[in-house]
Length: 80
Image 1: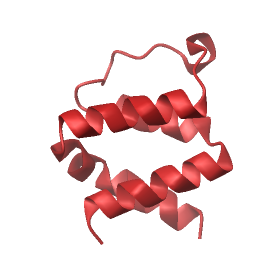
Image 2 (image 1 turned 45 degrees about the horizontal axis):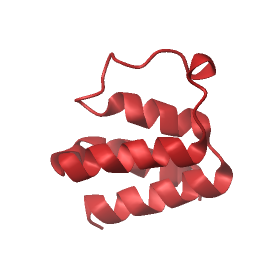
Image 3 (image 1 turned 120 degrees about the vertical axis):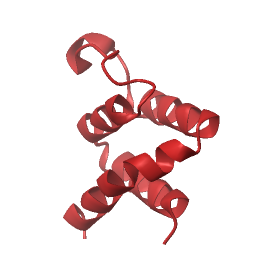
Image 4 (image 1 turned 180 degrees about the vertical axis):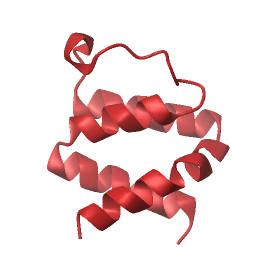
């Protein structure tokens, strides 16, 4: 499975589960975002906003999908 396919499946699963914590952690793992996020509780974001932000960074830097691949795999295995 490609990194893009893993991304799509993991994002779909997180959206279906409303897993805002995992999406926040994923966003913070994107190399161009690392260290720039505050606390989730103070952010006021929702699942849709996080997914849009993650997808925006992925579109800007396709190599980010490969970087995040292990996290996609771990997340999907946890939700089998």
